[in-house]
Image (cartoon, rainbow, N blue to C red; front, side, top):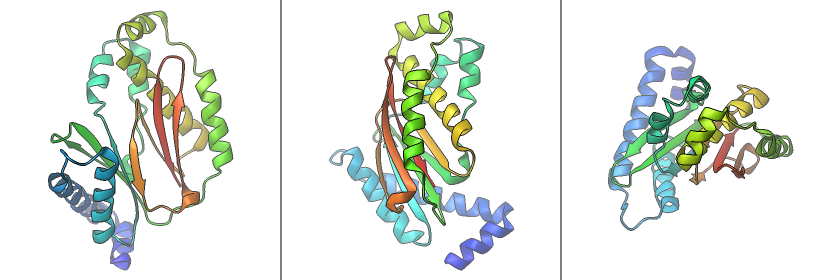
Length: 211
């Protein structure tokens, strides 16, 4: 299967799309099977990871479970030009599969890499810590909206953090940022992933980076 995947990856196009569709279907199927009422988000992530490991054992996987963020994006859409531009700082979707679970009202996001690379964790940590202190205040009109709704502060900070990390780390890594807490389980080598809960005076969030 690993050889088949590499062939699919090299040919691209329909084959690559087919793999993503199959993996997404597997995540959806596992979401239906997980006992959401009795499982914590951490357990949910672990169960889905086991399923992906069985079906795609030639890949490394990370499964992240967190509250939905679409509502924050919709609410922020009318807050001005800069906020709209920040929303366009989306993670590179090449390595991510995202599925919404109605059962738990949460997002399940899976990151896959075939050959993970080691990360410079000291540099990443310093970059994030610097961003915690150096992310500028939003324009007055956006700041007023943030004071009224903490959810918008979380969204603003998450998008700023994602954009700055993309600029600082480049395209060789997969970056995922959520405006709040997130549970993550993975089978990546210890040296090739980094998870950090950042704290800013306006809001907090979680960063996951995969090499």
